[in-house]
Figure 1 (cartoon, one colour):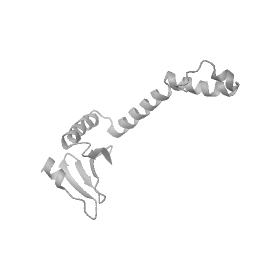
Figure 2: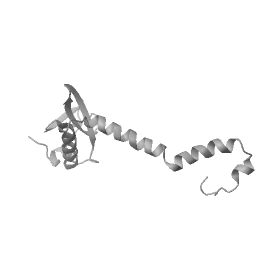
Figure 3: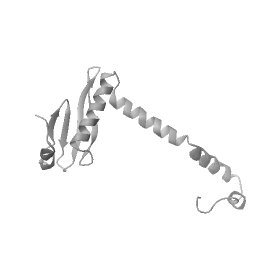
Figure 4: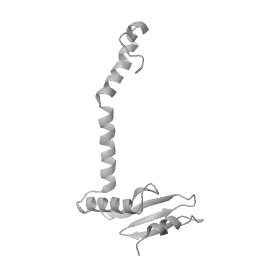
Length: 129
């Protein structure tokens, strides 16, 4: 039987972690510390994996189900949702590191080492550096 928002709110932590199933591999993990975490258990190429979908109440039951639907669509298309998430994270980090500002700051750091303090400070805006 699927979980309800009321049941999720009322569940109390115990001595051991407790899993409350919602169906389709989605469950709420209630830790003894009191944290409530959405997890999805699935298989890729015969290997069992567990994907985090967020922490309750930051991620509601409806949002967890939406995240599950998106991940299941990726899995149905032949992609591993966890691998896709990691690849997207690496792509965002690489884009940030290769931005004009990041490259300019790196260049400035190496350029000013070979200059006097007065020369390196000319033309700088005191608010930004």
